Length: 451
Image (cartoon, rainbow, N blue to C red; front, side, top):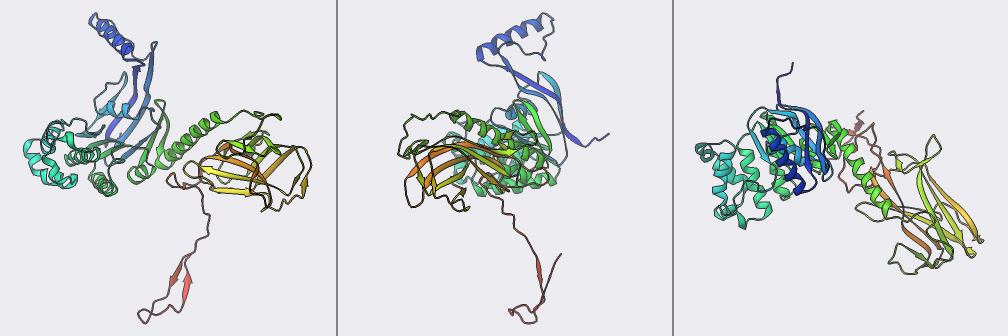
């Protein structure tokens, strides 16, 4: 049996009341029941309660790091506070082997009236360090925090970044066997973040186990060996960092897609008699000569239904129901794609694709665009549509946010990227070895390909 573990969590669950009044009422009732010798069931939800963490289990070994991810309210901080002993679990148990250093909240444990130097000694004592130990490490702590003469100023005058610097320096320099970090690295500047990353890697090499809570894909990818994704208090994905980051990205994209759909009007919202604004300040408008009633996007699945969650690299089918009210000469149909952080990242245009119609008579039509292979990075996207005429600046019809869709992460590859990447460039790579140069600075005379 493996005995090299430092953290072992088994079936951890924690519940809270939805309101403070309900929590206090249940707490008083449970305390009285225990005083009377009655058993209080802790694995059952009562009216007005919810599971902040539900049945979470994992094990962490010496020198390993775990990335804890999830959207806001998923239970990450509650789980970290259970591990740190701030909360007792209602169900399950957790065993920690070794000295624990924790940064669960920015400035937690700091007295605002004391100076930074005084808070170092107070926090060091709380972490189990004696005065001699702190004296020995004081210069190293001050150098790491790098807040200069402000170390002898009251902490209440510090910025949030300065508090994080000092708190991280104290927690890290106490040489913990276990280090718990909650969203701290996102506060400091880029130089401080690099210093933290370097120090965390050094702690890992020395055998420290690290649990890092972060929304940053880059931080989890750089620090962690494995991951855990929480959603609504439960484990949604666990295992390799790649698998957890895929699941986290897909979950965020799915939530964003759902919110986009809630803001979109239902099909058939624009009837034939509805007027159209001609300005571009709204979601839709135009001259009224053409009206688009519905836009759908997806891929044709085997069961014959459309799905707006598309696999990476999968073909895309766009369909639009169009009502042409007057004859249109040289019409152009255009679709553009917006990403979460960027506008107009891609477009497809009927004129550029050689659908060059001379005239469209009045009537109802279905316009279809088939895109054999897209190279959009995983995430959520919004589709816009416009109808115009060649050589005319104004739009016959425009619709911002006509449809939305999601690109899922591929399961056969890991596309590491931050959230601002929107296109995958599938280029072909080659590596050529240059021959040794006889004369310094001369051009190579021969080369060979490296397979």
